[in-house]
Length: 296
Image (cartoon, rainbow, N blue to C red; front, side, top):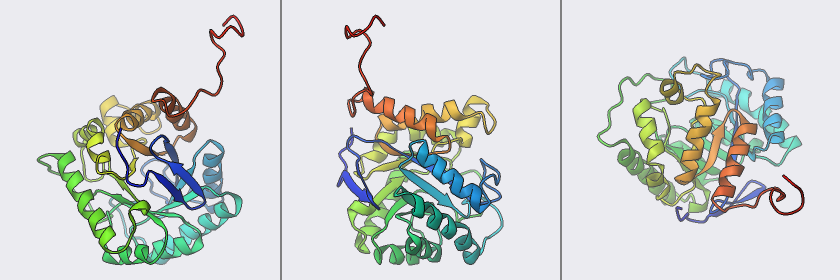
């Protein structure tokens, strides 16, 4: 198991011990063109309901996004703010769940933190120095994610000599930049970026060698839910990838992942809790079988 820098983290109003805890992060896309839900949570009421449903199903974090990383038309900063801030405010009024905002725009990050977000999930890996400055000026946490291309732009045929080594080097460099800017180590999480400028073989390799990313010492987020690498591996369309996503998530946890960013929260929580018990991180909910208390 990896040894994490500051394994016990307080993020927002919740405290986690990543040395022996796996956290499920629910996904709420307030976008009309999400690769998975195709706009089903684009409306404000639907987005808030989805976030609170994720909490009810056991998510301890929810990740709210107003602009996809994937290729597509640009979205103005104000439009993105208008999408995410009302969701943050509504969820915060109902729950102390950790609220993450998936954005690469510094002004969106600032507005989100001001509205009550606890974590900024930057899929560009702090590419924009202004994002680093915003985070250094706040107490919010940050997920530093590996990617190669500018957001919303195609990046055909990504090439790596060794995808895991190159992702690890990128993340180590971005962490060093964050630390140099004054973002403390106990606010940093990392994500190797499954499928972000990577093909299916790259994402499978990252999952298989996930421990090499976890060995950097920072809690690692695995965003494997319903991704194309699952669909291509199993020949499954969107909506048919839950089992494959859970398998990838469990392999990631066994190799050091501690946050699972998932669409199907209930099954993911069960998978996480079962894996924790197998690893000796938690006790079963109850003990009855072959204990003499009944004839099961």
